[in-house]
Image (cartoon, rainbow over all chains, first blue to last red; front, side, top):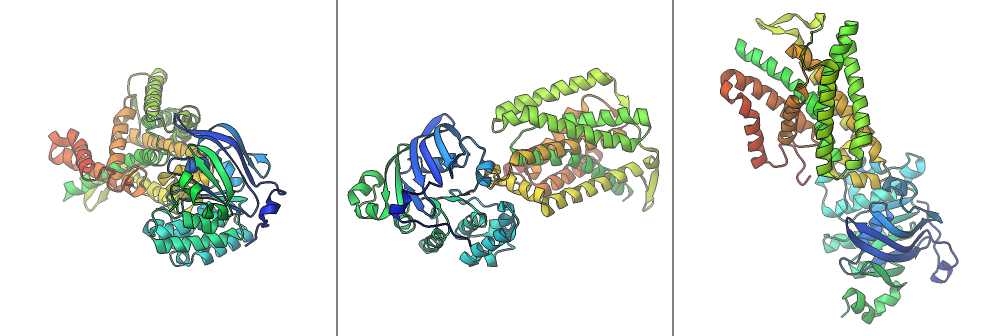
Length: 250
Length: 287
């Protein structure tokens, strides 16, 4: 699996961001949900987006993916604007997306779910697919089964494996722990930590320990705006900040 | 026994025609979420086109081919110009497609007149064959064979090709398909045009069976196709095939054994299925 260059926190400021959002604003129907989100994600980083329910985390990811109407702001992928592009073009430019509720296609087998998501059918893609299947051995066993027969954890693994097989500049993962049993969350968390070594990630996560285990830096959203950012270790030690924005402190 | 065999063949032939019309409608509704009330127009124009070409060339086969081409072209234009702006807007879809149905039905009436035109069976299929001592119209057997061949073709397309894979995935979540880097709008156009072509083929094959083509036949047969979609479950190939068989056979047998119920039998069946399985016999719950 080809790996991205990783950088120290100090080096990060010297490198151009893979993804840059500036004052992003978007709507769901008539509702103005994202009202000013700015963030940078640098190569090899895992950035977690935190915030209470309704803060605009999922909507931010969906806006990046081109699934929602953008009202204003900047979205740049590796220095090029992707603002207003339809979702399939955003994906083709190298944005992998694992949605909330891990939508996998029930009437396709595991193999077909992987096949349909392959953007190229070259050696490298098959090598990455093989890596993804090594990461999630359950999928190997269920390779010919319909996705409808998979458990919640296996569906999440399939949704992640689906994006891992492509050569992405960045992968957006939305609440991978949602609705999963603690033991499965642990396994998904281990996989995400392994993925960190080879991918640039944005992770939206309500499970604070998991977010801390995976993330390098964080952004907190509140009322559709990015209101705070920093290093995850700082947030983990700052109960006051957690209480203020996340309501998860002791 | 003879009566049973004749009714069975008649029912299967009707089921084939219903299937040709309902298959496209079901996939368009299941995958694209489009309530296409203009689907019957393709059936109508398929019928008129085939009769028009046959009158000029004498070839039933050229007529059928021309009908398929006209249906596909109409589907392509309808999707690009009228349906695409209405994705996700059910009320707009109903109004637009109903409007198209009315306009293109009137256009057909303008071009070919209000009087039904005669439609002939091809000479090679105009005879009768003896099956188990019972004489059965060759054309009905031909319709059954076409229905089976089309069903096998669609089944192979859905289950053995990338287009089919995208269609199966698109029935569940077109948005997720798009987010994987697939331009689903191209597949939408393809599915819409393909569905329209099938309906037009249905129209072309239907008119020689009943002996004429008239401007009201699109709407009349479209209702049957909608009932099949409700009974079978939208977007389900198996459901469409099963629903078509059920309606075709039931229509024929009820009309023979209990004629007064012939008109209401389909609607009653739909009501029962809706109460028992609201998503249809093979439909996707929650769609």
